[in-house]
Amino acid sequence: MSQLHRPSLDEIPVLAATIAATLADNPLFVFLFPDDEHRESDLTTYHAWLLSSFLNSGHTSTIAVTERDEGVIAWSLGQPTHAHAMKVLRPTFHDPDVVKRSRLLAADDRLGFPADPYLFLPFVTVSQRHQGQGFGSTLTSALLDKADQLRLPVATTTPVPDAVVFLERFEFKVVKESPPAAFGPHRWTLLRPAPAASARHQRWPH
Image 1 (cartoon, rainbow, N blue to C red):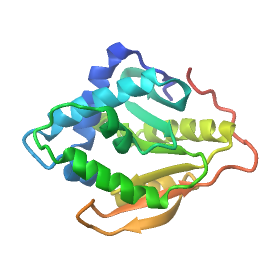
Image 2: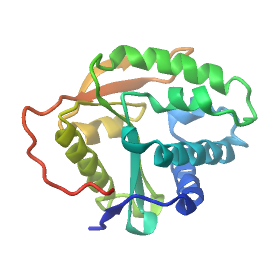
Image 3: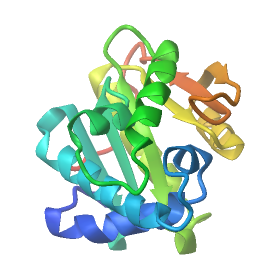
Image 4: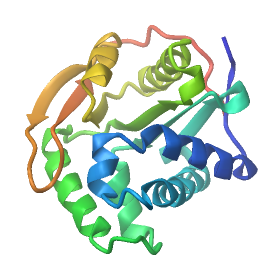
């Protein structure tokens, strides 16, 4: 299985384009970026900024990728990513209501998150040609190793039923279900509790 590493800024454009292509049909991003014609380019811009921000923000957030960039994972400390992004990101999207939708979504998602410090998992993506080969599991296990080291719970949301099934394999539990509404698609909030003691010993990339 591929080893994980922390990417350089030079890798960000390719990673952002890979993520955009993978998530273009995700209901969450269809909601945030409803313009079919420009969604993938807007998503590339959005994730290029997001990943660059993670690389520059020190210990509070990070990303890791597998060799040859088959997959990418990102996490932040207690901050829903789309909310954080829209506070400081000022790109020009084709739809000016993107910021409004992201704020509504973030406000609703926060209702299912812990009050105490936690790791927020915004996404795990694997390039389409490498899906089904175990890269998603490798990336998720690395995040959980970090969570165990910090003794923190992990929170996330997803609009994809298959992702719920995947995350439940890693001890995540559904704590909130949000039906379709004006502020977002049908989605699930999941939480993995903080461990009583660290049982993982995988190496986290620096």
